[in-house]
Length: 480
Image 1 (cartoon, one colour):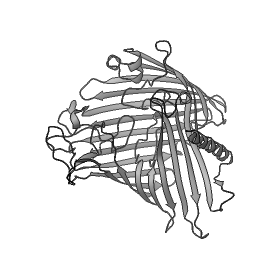
Image 2 (cartoon, helix red, strand yellow; image 1 turned 45 degrees about the horizontal axis):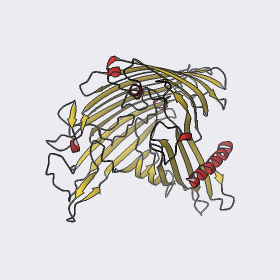
Image 3 (cartoon, rainbow, N blue to C red; image 1 turned 180 degrees about the horizontal axis):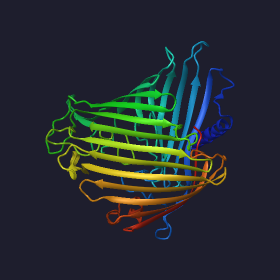
Image 4 (tube, rainbow, N blue to C red; image 1 turned 120 degrees about the vertical axis):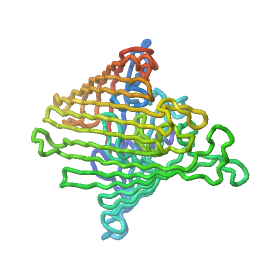
């Protein structure tokens, strides 16, 4: 643990140096062909819900929605990343080699970072979401190759902390050539508590039954079509495959022990308008993005704040033992209008509908006797107004409305307003200016069905209340 803390301290020192210079640090004792870059993202602070004398703050959003509905109540989080950049020995070679590592730290409970560690019950978790090697301009200009674990994803909706269109993060390899990207993601998990489908099977081919893992193979392709420098259309396609294990034990009970072979596919299109120059009342940095994505069979995932299509939703059809009737559709609109040096408006809406393969839309049986909803539908809309009182002082106001329907149940809904006076301590008039020091006050109003069913982390603490409140003092930064 002492060595880990020392490593974090050294990385922060390097991060500070990088932030001051804005360039990659070059090893003075090695070769001019080696450089090091360091980056960080994080948020930390303190918060209250003022329930039963002052409980630790809980998220006000609806259950199974994650940060969709506003991210101002998110907990402490840290990412530390390094990139080792190398050049070929031949000076005329334009290839650039990157070795990128990233660690993330978060708490599995409501504990604040300063009062928790990796040995605490529900304490800190350390993950390695990125560890890959990339060769840019290899063999021919514009051709990039990479192998490893990577946060391989495109646009995010920062107000809701949602990577909404093409989050292919995982472990695999990729080929990029100019405006086209091909990617293979190998997905496997030992989490036997997940609903569907299990990634394990009981192997009897050797004569001795044993637990084995298999991968879901996800192949994806993306292509960007540019019109000048301001308009871009991105086309997305995915194919998912889970093979049938030959040595799987036969199912001798009503429970499916070994999930059979199946597949899935995804099609999507996204339109991005940068600058929106024909709108004369908007300033630099304004944009509009609209996307539609459809996933079928095994590739109908994306729930709980995630949009990863391989996180299959719903229950299987136990007559055919597959997900042939499953589907999902997601529509996202996201915009930023910089109207003047005094005001910016950021907004979004998200519509998502998912259905599993079972015949019913309500509660359905799945593997190992578990039950899940076989259909869900949700809709969220949100707006953020940023008043630039001065270079240093920004007044942010957010308004979100979110509703969700599980199976055939009535709608849950929540309306939330957040007031966030903010110190943008770099003195930049931008929605993206960081670091931030900010005070957060959020108030949420729930409908009767959400209130009575405690359909929010806050309500699960406070009980059946129509109103929920959150207050915090937070810091957020990024140096990528």
